[in-house]
Length: 93
Image 1 (spheres, one colour):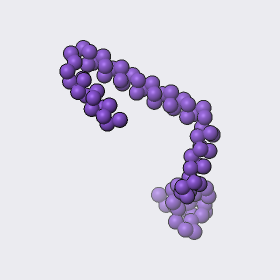
Image 2 (image 1 turned 90 degrees about the vertical axis):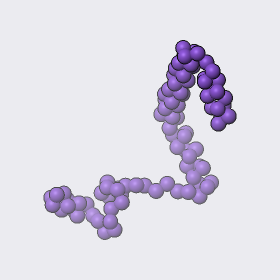
Image 3 (image 1 turned 90 degrees about the horizontal axis):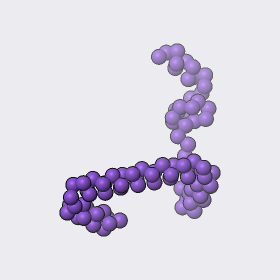
Image 4 (image 1 turned 120 degrees about the horizontal axis):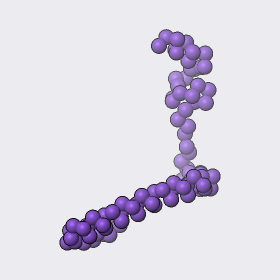
């Protein structure tokens, strides 16, 4: 990949300005199209993609950790922190 980028850079250096701008425009358009179609593909196949990621997590032994506590909905609450305590904190601030 690095080799392709270096070859493209050297070719662009020796081109005329109009050809260089056209080539850069085509590259930006192509990258944008890849990102858009990749996002569409991911959203339409999210369940399959998430299942594939989970299978790799189980194979490698890494487990996803939730960043929020389902009881309170705040990131990393202190141990023993309850919903009743969060109401008291809201009244203080």
